[in-house]
Length: 393
Image 1 (cartoon, one colour):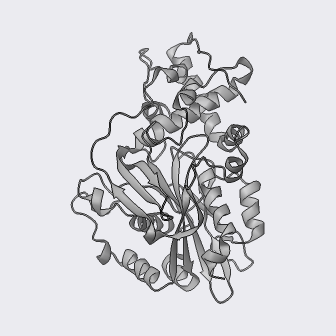
Image 2: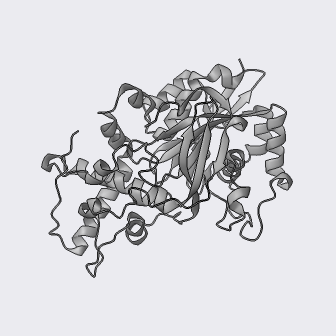
Image 3: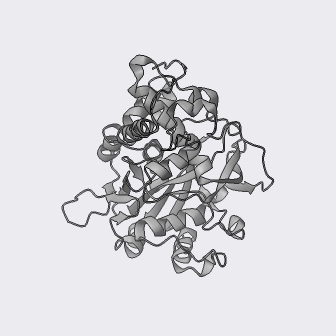
């Protein structure tokens, strides 16, 4: 739908502005899937199929071994990004405090009016460049923060679109989204990334496989609530803001391993790395998984990179395939609920279902009939397309 970029005249009271903001926020959380479909209605065929915004080379032609993905850090401060969410283009959807002052940043509005259970502004790695010319990706990162990279720009842009969708007959515009222009331009805004990992349990004797699906509770999370998602998923960031973690945690496998422990086993995010860096080789969970990866019982793959068309949140797409015996030893006792939602389990007739069968029926159901986050649908669809490579058959 073409929303004209007309200004919104504010004649409401501060209290009315808060009620309006909360109504739009509620609409956004309840209708993320439908709003994404609305955005995608004008997208090209490839974007509609993948449900993510990409650039050439961002989606791998086939699964890439994770160890071949090269990460570079550029610690030099970068200039102010093109847009950071404080622009006047968002004035039309900003709420005001009781004293009449405008709440400038979207993170401030969320914190003051609708704080989720998990909401903290930690340091993150900021994606600066993506080079796929050699076949194996090289990703360059700087530094940013969670609020700057996800809340103040991405959630604000989604809120603006939700407000425009509600008021479609009056043609309220989306001037902030228009000002962003090409959302895949990494210089236009601070781009932080998450790692969305499809976890597959594989019985190599029967070639039966299951995968994990997570339902994200909107009362617990600030972004992507009310949707199904692969798991684990985590923001690519140091384990703590202490300076020694920036280099020590700058590794995709380390980040995925931490998220597996947190989301599947309920491990706390406090690793004591505010006092000293994590000694990964001596952490039994990390050591066991890494040893299994080295001997072939675990496979870790890069599938690509893309941006949510509604929020512009950026996800690196990966898959981890774990032998059934090892998976059962390490994860079968994990809780189906965690701090962000719960694991979706499909009854398999035995009462011991661990997840969702990796079959065409269930993959198609999730991709086309369930409300799934784009960054979950994409790795699931890609993994199904490359299932012979991932499952080794």
